[in-house]
Length: 295
Image (cartoon, rainbow, N blue to C red):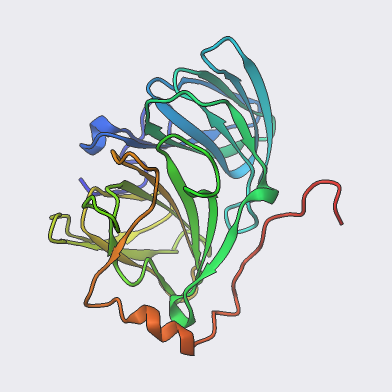
């Protein structure tokens, strides 16, 4: 199944559970966890590296990294994905972690099967590159917290995208399902949240490429996910009145950790039109907070 409705993959106390075995691929994983005030959750990283990212609320991540080292990372988090950039914690493969939240929180655990065991680390919100991409009705904000050139992982790539109501993102449609000098093979998960209340919704399109057969047009709501093993993907459509957020989680077999894409030739010309348009003035919704100790 490519479109996963909210709650349909709930497992072991997690609101969302996607792993290679359930997705039918080899690398990418995503879990979403709600902790009640005072809640605690333990998990083993296994063969995957993980990033623990607050979606709402604050948490503490304690890591025993598999080499006998212990680290504790307090995460300040945020009120919601529409209110600010969040800090995060990196949990290496073969480690064990304990997640705690005195006030309650919702966390995303983005994972990728990998070979190297890197050091456990804290990713500060102030270091997250915030990018406004596109123009006109195709303007969106990208929080590149774990982009390939922003934060060191072995295989995992993860970013957040915010699309104001009425705009399209992931456009022009693109793909990353063939290995080559200009494209990398990456399995991708989209996880969605919306502003504007329980009626909020959007749409996601994925359609067959020369190397892939995935074909879906899904109405998506808060808590939904879409799996993209292959194919052209885009647009992600935020209907008027409701801002769209999605978390992209990617990993693949390539020797280089890189996000290399090909645009659908039928729509690639859209990029050239941006030079004659202004970015949507609603963006950025926010930027990274200043570094501690700076004005």
